[in-house]
Image 1 (cartoon, one colour):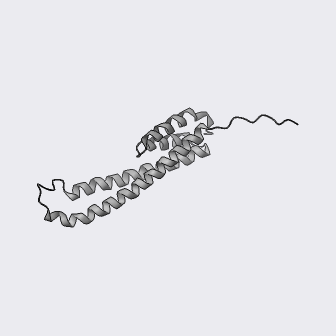
Image 2 (cartoon, helix red, strand yellow):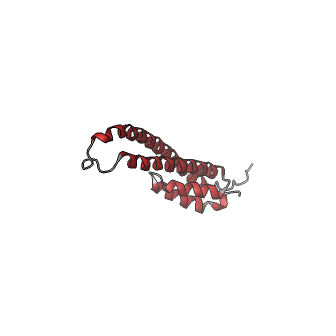
Image 3 (cartoon, helix red, strand yellow):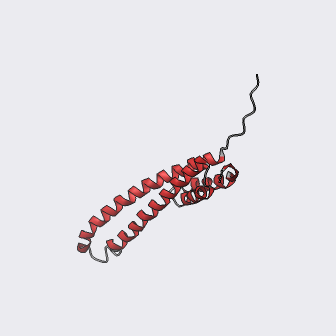
Length: 129
């Protein structure tokens, strides 16, 4: 008894989803590392008054504002990458999967994000809507 041939498995969206989820997880780690750095810098602002301006030209408040920007940035791209990775694995909402893989480019492992964009774009036919 012969069985009917199975249709080929859609592997491009699966690879794209896994890559996007991995980069999204790394972005979450970068988010937590940024939060820890913000805590340390905010605690060092108390001691910034004791350091002369020639030794400490960039104020701690300026650095703290950039670190808060980094925290918000990593939070946004981590959430977008994780939602896009889940969407790619479910093969639903191609636009969200593409947006998540593009957000993965801005993470620490940007080469994996570029591969995720390529596989998401190539696997567009695998998505339902």
